[in-house]
Image (tube, rainbow, N blue to C red; front, top):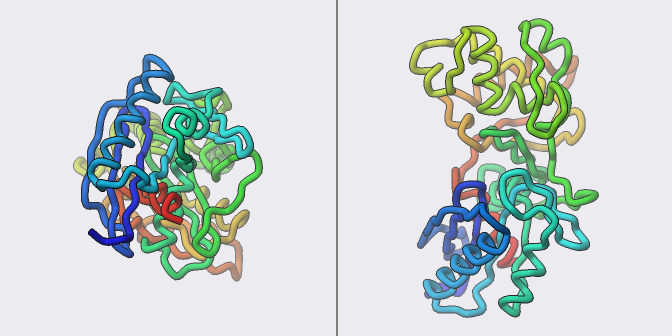
Length: 299
């Protein structure tokens, strides 16, 4: 068995995915998913332990480096989590697992793990500053500098989805301002995420439709409006963080021609004499966050 071996776990709202990675490229050799228990923190922690044991057994290594990616804000000092879709708010998964299992497991925000994976052996490999942008049910991001996660005050990832939607964008498309899951009115997430695309379809067509349905039915005007607002989101990233590249992940990154569509949108929004940052699709797809957590553990 190759010496370069590590495990990653992605703790999500519906599933806990465990992957075993081997070799210098950290390629998946084994994968297992189980449902996420949402009835209690204790049940969720037991399911995490089950996945850790499974990885160690598959690797035949009790000391297998294993990293864990979780959604939400992770306080750097205490490790306490604030999350909307898993029963972990107020708890430190890092400390509780160490107490129960007697060894350390690095716990990282899932968007930061995604960015790390794509910066090291992914689409952003070779770029100094890599921004990972997940366009899924919500909108989130992470950033890596020189192949390492950037230190973020208070444990925040790049919480781009909760920046306000530009008033000019909402006005020119006649969009309804909607309440975000965070409680604020008119966040970018309400127009740029998969849920946001359905919101735009509802405003324009009177019915909610997914990206796949819009493509299948040829509703290009709705997709153009979404791309225009996503371009505003990309401009915000470039103005604030100025990364060398932005790597796209999440379900909407799989839309046909999504990179050229968003490249055109970003070019239409950038300031004069400003070179648009490079847009790329994730190389490691749905496994990228799990892979990033494993790389963090291996390091």
